[in-house]
Amino acid sequence: MYKGLLKTSITNNEWGRVMDKKKQISMAVIKRMPKYYRHLAELLRNDVDRISSEELSERIGFTASQIRQDFNNFGSFGQQGYGYNVRELFTKTGAILGLDRSYKTVIVGAGNIGQAIANYTRFQKIGFDLMAIFDANPKLIGLKIRDVEIKDIDSMEEFLSKNEIDIGIVCVPTTVAQKSVDVLVEGGVEGIWNFAPTDISVPKGVAFESVHLSDSLLTLVYLMNDKG
Image (cartoon, rainbow, N blue to C red; front, side, top):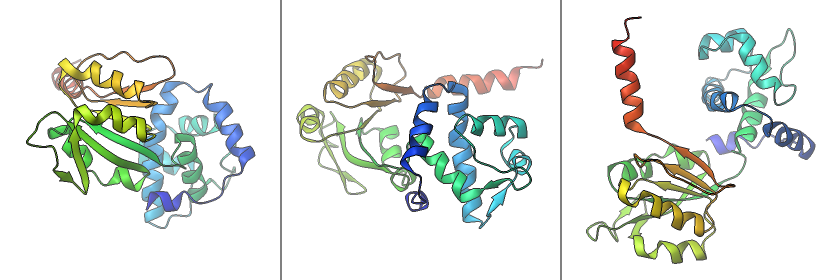
C-alpha cells in the first residue's frame, strides 16, 4: 500500500533540493519524520485530502509551529489559509525518508527478535525486501519464514558477495554482534539496524541505528517512579 502511495511525482530538481537540505537537518527533526509519515498514511486511508498544521498538531502531539518548522527545513509544502495537501506531503515525506526506493535486507539471527521482524509484513509494504535470514543453530537452518529461508551463518559472507544487500538487521547475542556487523560491512552493507544489547562500532560512511530494548524499558520504569 505505502509503496503505491509514493508514486505521486517528485521532480529531480525537488529531490535535489531535499537531498541538499537533508545534510543540514538536525537529528531531532529526522527522528520526528517517521511519525509524520505514519499519521499522513492514516489520513490517506481515511480519505482526508488536506489538513492544517493545527489539525495535524492535535493528531500528533507536536505544536503547530514545530510542524511548520520541521517541514520548512525541506522546502515549501503548505499554503497559508489552505494547509497541506495530504497526498503531496505524504509523498514528499516518504522521499525525505528515502522510501521512494526499495532496500534489499538480511536478518542475522533467527531467534525470537529475528523471527518477529521477519514476520512483520509492514516492512515489505514500505519497501524493505527480506532476501535471507542467517543463524548458527542447525535446527533452524533450512526452515522458512514467509518463504525466506534461514541459511547457515557461515554462508553469509558468500551470499553478500553475490547479492547487493543494503541493510543488515542484527539480532544475535552480544558475544557475536560485533563480528556479525563486521561481516556485513565487509560485504558492502551500508546500513546496520542493531538489536544486540551491546555497543557496536562501524566505519565512517555506514549508517547505524541501535535499538536497546532494555534501555527503553528502564526509561519507562524511571518515568513510572519519577514523582517530580
